[in-house]
Structures are given as structure tokens and as C-alpha cells.
Length: 185
Image (tube, rainbow, N blue to C red; front, side, top):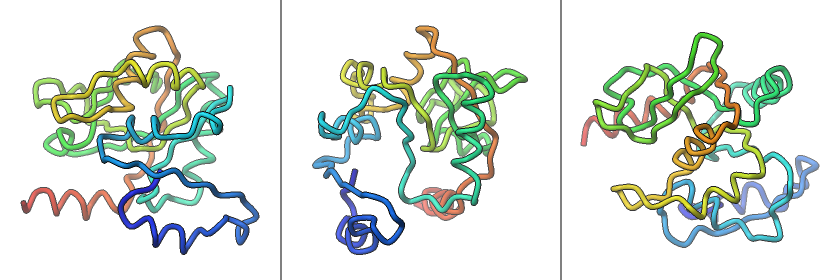
């Protein structure tokens, strides 16, 4: 999904051939949340297989994606997410995740109110999701901010019995810059 600065993305990525990949792009007309971005995916792209969702403005550690794949294989979880430890005051601009001592995720709330914070862990936009995400997303109502949040669909899936696990990873470098920018406004 592209929107902001998409011309630069097109220019850099092209058709993906310089990495021996095939790249396709879909445009998100309105910025109404990450769930809305996924709803912009053309129907013909959707397969009956797990999907990896990664924020394109993250600079990731070398093995971040591999760690998620390995956690999925080891745990046999349907949902796998990258977790970051954050200062409590920062969670209201990110998410709050309730995970047990074995990193099984029991809840996820996007941009929680202070009283909704469940732990010092936030989920970054780095997920492996089952194909059923495409069934859940259209049923998510916009949040108070008018956003269709992928995390709301994921939380509903968890409450419906999908097994979810988190992988504790270092925060993307962009988080520090974004955090400081939001605190100064």
C-alpha cells in the first residue's frame, strides 16, 4: 500500500527485479488506518495463505522477519507479532499488548487510553497473519479517531480462539524520531 511519498517508493523499488523479486503496489486513497490500507489490497492479490504485514517506513534488524517465521513454525501459532518494550507514556501512541510469560498474546489494543494499558509491550507493524484476516477486516468499525485498525481485527481473532504469539525485538530506529516529534508537538 502506498500513499505518502509513493513516487520515491516506485523509483527505488521499481518492479523488484534488482532483488530478484516481483513488486506490485496498491494505492491507499485516504489514510484511515492500517486496517483500511489492507482493505485496499486488490481482491485478486488475496490468497488462502498466511500474509506478512510490514510497515515500509521501518529499518529492521537483519533477522527480524526470519525470527517471526521461526516463531510461527515453533509455536504453531496462527498470528505472530513483533513486540517492543516501550515507556508506559509512549504506549498511548502505539499499542498495548497483554502477553503471558511464554509470549502468548491474549489482547492487543491500538492507541489505548492510559487506563487500558496492559503491559510495557507494544506491537509494531510487523505481523504474520492467517488468511482469515481478510474476513475479519471488513467487519471492523472505525475507531474514535476514524481509523480502521488492523489491531482491532487481530484482537477479535484472538478472542475468537486464534493462537497468537509475540516475539520481543528491538524497536525500529524510526520509533525514537517519531516519539520525539510527537512529544514536542
